[in-house]
Length: 320
Image: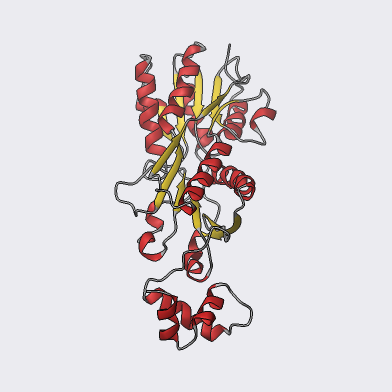
């Protein structure tokens, strides 16, 4: 299928079809809809030149907890790095994917989304989809790439730091539920890191927050009753929530209890005390996404998956 065949089926000239795909203002809505319908029916989607570097960033359709903070920081990095590489951006909620059939783009980037949100991507679009912050799937389309942070390395980094600072009974609250996102990967990595140091891995010390923030104060209260000397809380707004909860129980950080949480760019370093955190390297994630898209435009093979290390930002919330 090519543009001439689309034009023949639509009863118009190839030039008119080209104007439809380029969103020329002189094209009527009825004709535009007919051309797009024929294109969808025959699985046709134009491949665009290197000069037309439009990238669609696909985001969750509403705020989702606990990943929204991560989504925001990835989005911030992408909107800085991609334009520096000459890409033009359009942000599209995941519940509005039908718009992809009517816009020109040379690649898409999905954050806060699952691979299952994009069935038959290769059949629909001859351009790459980069899924950020999700592990690679066993069955995937040939033009889907996964760019993510190393969850196992990140969890190990935090537990190793707490152990090196003398913490011996570490309580963990993992944001989310084990059936979504990276939560189960984090739980398994935390258990492995604790076992490596001979530290307790009682299930009562390692728990999930569930959806929302409602259980957080209660969970921290239970961990304090079980005698933890440190808290590790990966995901979401854990640093803010932990600080609030510990204040309710009159616990001082780090004198009474050490704390490591996920980095919140506009909060963690300004907390009292400044919080030691783990964080994905967001600029590196964005640069890797840009590299993947650039390689595709240069007709180089698509890398199926790229994994980048977490960073540990050492501040004052872990005892010395």
